[in-house]
Length: 444
Image (cartoon, rainbow, N blue to C red):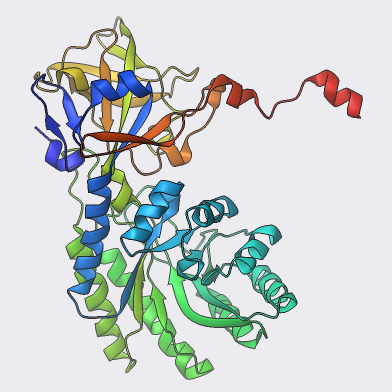
């Protein structure tokens, strides 16, 4: 049984042989709230937040854990993050709006993004955001001007592209030299960016930010990133008299999606990060700055599962059997985008051996709409509740309305109680913003 590896921490089989999470039977959840359904285990979310705080606190250095809300953002999730004492990373005006609705302290928010709009920058300034991570020369000028109009001095971090390419999927690498993010170290771009921030009347550069990618297992990439960036900070100290207060090395720690995956642990990540920063600071005769990390996937990923109903079981001549469910690429596009691997379970027969090899597919008009390829589950039947684990990160966050499919509901479970934290969309919701051709022509 792989529950302890890839399912939420409170997962178990109940007396009926059903999968239970947070004291809630997944069959009852599917009956009550419908499918597809995201189920988040509150205890796992809190455990992961606390694991980061404990791991970094054990090294006796100044640090902040900044939840990367792009992994999963909604009011309830942001409220939980605030309760656990984490700061928050937002990457759009919409994520910032969710943070404001949740009452998250704006001083603890870091605003990222490679193309922040004027409206987003103004919203950030008007709500008193703590830090903006500047990502382009035009943004530096625009933010300085907008802060000047308000008589403010805004704290900023300069995003650097360190030239580190970790061993992960190309689509989630962000630190390579040709990345769309940040300022490269080649040809003095990063130094020029810091110089412009230092010269700006209404910006206060307080630190450096970098991010090398996501779903990273090999921690040596972080060591290399830190060596490069701390060397750059030493150069900035000598050339520009800049003292870095906040050193944000990003997130990206990988998680186990299948029982075969072997990611590094949060404890190991903390040890590598802190030891490398302290060692490099000593080598360059600097005081170690406050260390910031931005976990998203490694907090939210394992905390949720997705429930589906089996609608079709279709054997094909080559011997493969397709099991089709009532969702697919509209609620989990990662397998289609990245070739991501998942496992699956029949939730209403969780105690039955997984002997039936199948491929789980969605309902959408794309041959690539495959959720789990060549997986073993209990022999399926029409109407079964099929469960895919580890969908808490970049599942709902990347959900879409392809084929007019309404986005699923999201519930959070704890102590045998389930609360809807995002309501299910309806067909009326999908149509809500559409206008008839006749009305459009009349206005023209």
